[in-house]
Image (cartoon, rainbow, N blue to C red; front, side, top):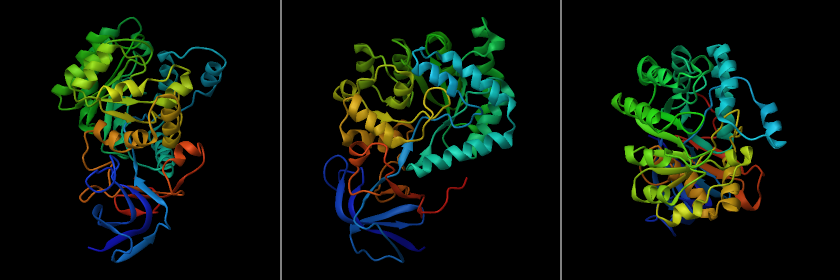
Length: 391
């Protein structure tokens, strides 16, 4: 098998402290040697290989791992966004608007739209994504969304429990029974995870527990949307049930932080959502200092975070959430991998998948220092460098 050396790397982030300086495992003057779809070794610049890509002294980081997206949908909610910018508060019920458009769209249209968003994310440095369903909210539509998502990633999340659809208004328990029964049966073959929006206006603690336990019984891993719109039971429920991740975490009580610090559940922050909804930014510093694991993700969706720009999320996390640049970079790479319980992603060490991003910069600090500037020069996905994205 031939080898490829990404050579003359000015600063390489490995996310492996055994390979270099500090928690990010920084290596200067390096070559990343790849064999097939895996990292073979980290060498000094000038390492021998069958092929060579000259990084020109620039910075190379592990490609971003986006552990929270809703890429499969139709329509947009630009008017809702404009109204929110004018002062109207965010409400979870806007999801129903997207549900109507998504149900009406055909499978080819939905796949084309999702592929376009996937390509856009890769241009922004995202090599791996998790994709949720949740804009179908009936058995056939949710199955279709999971099937489409499975064309784009092996981290598909069934999220029939996004909100209660209009046809079940006032009958949330009946809808939960549908989610836990026929809908789960139809979607589980295409999914790795199950998620629930545990929030006022969506699903309460008992309903959320029922959904998560049904998913676990079907062999799916657990994820939770929690504590986005106000204090609530989502974080502690996620930790109690051993969920891989609880996402949003905007409103955290001391008991929530203690639970995260004492468990294995990753707190995934979605700062572009707080930007879009004009809610307070989470206090990530408080969670990190308590000893909990954290991640950052884009939450790409039409209502509250219509972006694939992970660099923007890094800038927000550093400016408004109390994170250092190093912590934010780790949260978008190895943090995202931990939120998906993947040990093959988010780092550049021998044996890991060769997902890397060559920056048009000598330092990853430019994500914050030069916010909004396109910094991604090349993306390597599973050992393929500079190839157009394809499913």
